[in-house]
Amino acid sequence: MQPRTHARRTTAVLTALALAVSWAATTTTATAAPGAAPAATAGDVTSPEEAARVDSVAAEIDWFDCTNVVGPRVDCGMVDLPLDYDDPTGPTTSVAVLRQRVVDPSRKVGTLFLNPGGPGGSGVSIASNAADFLPAAVLARFDVVGFDPRGTNFSTNVKCWNNLGEQANDLLPTFETAFPDTTIEKADFVASAKKFGQKCSTTGQPLSASMSTANVARDMDVLRRTLGDAQLSYLGFSYGTYLGNVYANMFPDRVRAIVIDGVLDPNGWQGSPATADVPQTARIKSGEGASKAVKETLKRCAAAGKKYCYTARLGKPAQVWKDMTTSLKKKPIDLGDGYRIDYPLVISMFLSEMYADYGPDMLDMDIWALRSMQLDPPSKSEKAFGPARQLRERLKQFEAREAATQARTERLARAFDFPYDSSPEAFQSVLCTDGLNPRFASSWPSAAAAADKKAPGFGPLWTWASAPCASSTWTAVDEDAYRGTFDHVTANPVLVVGNYWDPATNYAGAVAAADLLPNSRLLSSNSWGHTAFLTSSCVDKAITTYLVTTKVPAEGKVCVGRSQPFRYPIDGAQMRISAVPPVGESHIVTPLPGRAPTL
Picture 1 (cartoon, one colour):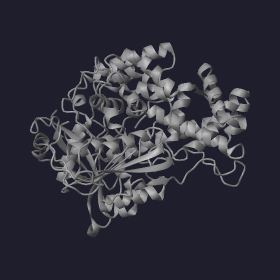
Picture 2 (tube, rainbow, N blue to C red; picture 1 turned 135 degrees about the vertical axis):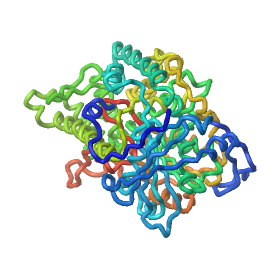
Picture 3 (cartoon, rainbow, N blue to C red; picture 1 turned 180 degrees about the horizontal axis):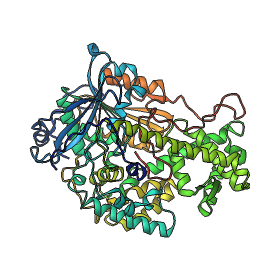
Picture 4 (cartoon, helix red, strand yellow; picture 1 turned 180 degrees about the vertical axis):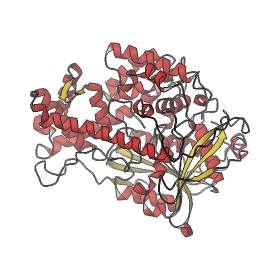
């Protein structure tokens, strides 16, 4: 792919159609400190082969002023990077970059790279929003940089279809559901998944075969050097933890400070010949994490009782949940005003709610509303009030959030060229080039059924997300994807952060990653929502201190989230949280109800 012209648009951006149809190398070991606690140490070094790939790239960021559309102290830029690092002077792909300049240059530590997850989430967007969520001490000492991983968002888009119409024809309405539930839906989903893999392995080439996390890590290393940092400082969430982990193991001597929060089990994401018959999105146990969070919510509801928990007013909470979901599988609920809610939509809505640290309170109110409507179906006139209205308002809140997200995208698109919504292709191109998966898409129904036994509802929701990755139809292979181990000794410690009740990245993933990385420290959090950052001053202080000084928290440190469910009487003066988090306050990618999950 030849370098494209870097558009600097400040006027009209996305077309109505684009908005409407949206949706490794090994390392060489040096002498490591045996069994030492995490500290700066002589550890593993970047392999000569990997160093040769990235160090020969002389990148130049084409910066341009975008303060009029983003805000003060902000620079936007485009940079051409090798499509294939085995051919560093060959074809390139363009990567979008956004920098929030340091507040206090006299105290500048360096550059902090951010990634919100996805995979395919926008680093440009999260960096543009950095002042809304990063602590002042971080903003005062770092240039904050986000880049859109190759193939995504404002970077050169991977494009598996010639136009949005073809994309919609092959994917909709199949991929506009959270997961298939009936025999017909499953057959349709498998057929669409095959088309997805075939299109990205033909029309999507060559970019779809060069979007592995290893290549993004190489891009980040080139950007680090281009921006003048001797070592990398990084804060990554959800899927962004895999990027941080891969970087740490590919470039261990180039690590200054890496925080990974909401951690994917790296071996689960990558897979092995022994586990390749299990879909990638089942191996990471996200469904089990969500199920664990719901069970804990119901357990605490039972302990709190009727005075504090709505669901307890209908019976034993665990039984209420079971009865509600069993009934919903058989019969969807008409909420009025054109809203109809079925089992897959409810499961995906509950997952979306649980991404917030006050998710258990939302979950409680919505379980109560759904079961109340099942026990006493409202008349047509009654749907204007009570539980039906509450659930409609919840769905409208998510719709408003999506609209606000699109508005933010429009604003950023005034500075960057954004001709095609590649979010479906971006997610799959990273997923499918990173990990091993079963050979045939027809394997997914049985895999989803197995996942459903471990994590009812949530298991299938996550498992189906990787169906396009079946290796017989997704043949776009990145030969330079990371296939190494995750146990290299980094120059400085890696801070691994895990939340006990994370519904997307199972806490077990953080434990596994920390166990693998010899020079790491695990910070645990007894908190709710997806990732632990911003759930308590304890977590925020530990992350801030580490980023600024590289000092890790005490071994075995456990923080407690400020938001805990069922602390206030339902009928008391304290108002229960009932709204989804507004756009601009989140550092992660939150899935929409009725859509596939995100990390």
